[in-house]
Length: 187
Image (tube, rainbow, N blue to C red; front, top):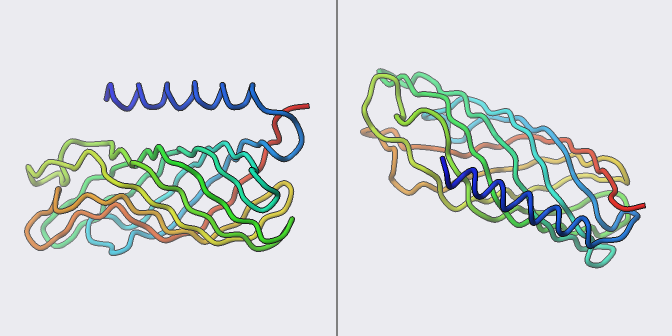
């Protein structure tokens, strides 16, 4: 838990430093959004809902870089005799976006580390330890304009074989949709 607090603090300090060092208009922006979807494969979780927060700098008019975080809550599901617990994923990631035109279609991904938080056990009726996290990726394709982003996205935190119970593999991945609002920074 201490490492999560330290990471969030460091992310906040980096964002504050980047924000204060940048100029106005839509080159620099905070992106605030929500997302929801279904877990794939749906062995230990059924659905997910979350919030996204990121900072983006348009390095060129068609290419953005930044940092991203948020929280996605995965709803545990019963799988045979296994009563899986809910859990969350808190990513700390680099944001990469490609905008072919000023408005319209875009491609992007977030790459980093996903901290898995929640109950220490995978299931209420099993003593298997929950993984702490792993490599995080969130590719997306969507539509954007000056204020809004609408996307189809896949998010996955790779945990290897940690958290597996018998034949049930531990999954922290989902396919879903997201909507975000752009807040310009500066003047």
